Length: 364
Image (cartoon, rainbow, N blue to C red):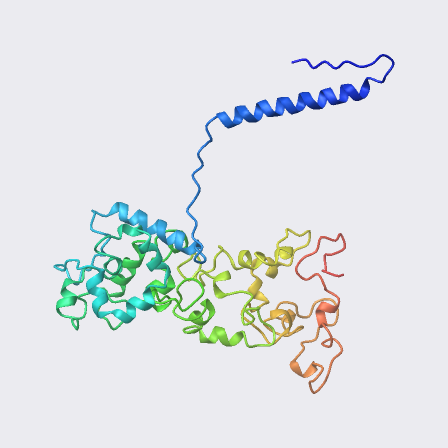
């Protein structure tokens, strides 16, 4: 394409060239737009949108239930109840006719939303029997224990059967170490910590209002430590027990999320990780050699006051290092200047390790 403009002799041609260029660009843009409009628009499959609330847990459970339904022989995903081998499914409508209150509470839970979306093979059988097993024998004799999978210790259903009903969907991931874990070997059922029939907690369908309250139901001695002067910010709601522990099982005895106690601590205290040019052996071995992570009446979660804590390893070396007792503290019967302020830490400040060339003694 060529655009021509005529001008009078003796006038400047630059404005005319500028207008010509602008018109050419406009024509080219118009042709490109028409060509794009003529081409078929690409199809984009967007994920379904659910604005009813937080759907992160819902999506996870829906996926688990869908995988379970795909592996079952078209029976609506009915759980197997060894205590009632001859029972047959009767459907949710029959269950709801008697259990109206339970159905009302259950309708607000994550499981109900997942089944309502068609996950887990929910069909005419419905979601009740997907967890509780076929209900024909239970409907005929409601007081017979074991005729339906009951998620209580008094309902007549063995804990192993209760757990298998839950693990049919919720297997793998954070629960891959549940078998042989301390909670499993001590006979805990999923329903001891979770309540799938009501939404009483913001997350996890916990049996109580929060993860911390649920754990404190058994671990009252640990919960009491958080009332001490120095403690993790758990009572303030800035963290929970599950930030350090995996209650569903772990490779460690205290159910830590990492392989070691130090690995768990380094998740927040990365500045202590190292490696350091000069390392303090007990620090590198285990943070709990000096700290009580759940709470202490000493500063910075120390297991004992300094210098008594330090003297558990360091006695009668180099400078005067008499055995100190609580009587030497500032409020004791015989105050000692070596115990006042930060005691050993007044000089040995980099006790967690040092990268300074003169830091062999962990001085400032």
